[in-house]
Image 1: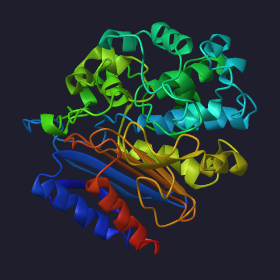
Image 2: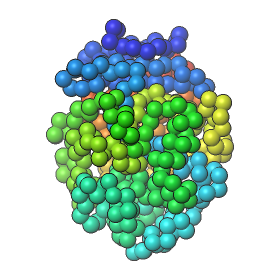
Image 3: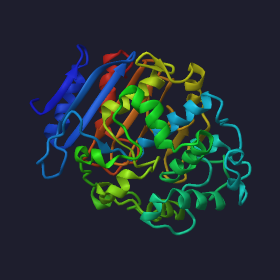
Image 4: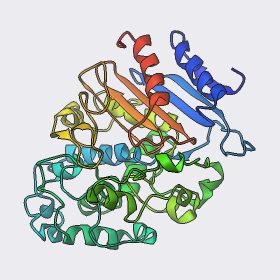
Length: 379
């Protein structure tokens, strides 16, 4: 247990025991886990090493790229702006972004973007990794292209594109980038160490991701033309997360940098009907909108059952959740965010040893199960 730092409140020791076992077994090299209940932090753990050579300890303030767990922060930002009347999820995207109506997309709604059902799971035009750092090019291409499938008829994971799509709507209604709105109106008021666009001043705190084996990498199994497009245009290169270009760019579906504490702190807003640290960020009704199912079925990209609300996966899709008013999403490699409104619990897990999963794995989910059992909601 000497490698594990942080604290657990009485009654939550099982989470610390499991966290320690994951580090001792090598399932984790370096990681952080945090949970809040009723807005209070009850578990806050970190340990292991921030690099594969095990020369740097994973510290209290270590942060790491969490890939698609970033989507939950972008979704929360959109929910907050919608709660203020700046975004109508039922409205056509073209109301806010007129050029988006091109190529048969006039009827595509903001809800379609939020629920991975807009048919824009990738770029049709060939793009490079550097194009991900060019917001204007990335969004202009998406606005101009036709959907891959009829919007609203099936879920299809928008692995990279969702952040540009939702982020551009946010930019147009708020007059600021999604990373700026998130930082100014959510992260900074909460003191949450999560960034969509990391300043260079924070680089020395970033843990180095350890890629999954090549056989487990995204797209390694081939798949349909849509899957190949998502996986290879421009492709996902874990080494890119070590570059200043990636860290500094706003890639709101995959480029966020933070730790478990920040994930849990931020999502305490959603777990507690819009309030965190005594501050109201959005109304209860605005929070609960995220729970309304928008699309369900076999995901045409992931090839598994999916059920999406506004920006989050819902119970009955990829992940079994013990309470009905709960939602989640995870990042490539294993990071995870869970919000359980019935238990008033938020959970965050972030690590550097990646497994070939895009929606979390048993490391984070096992820790979540320990939390549910501790609050009397587990199986």
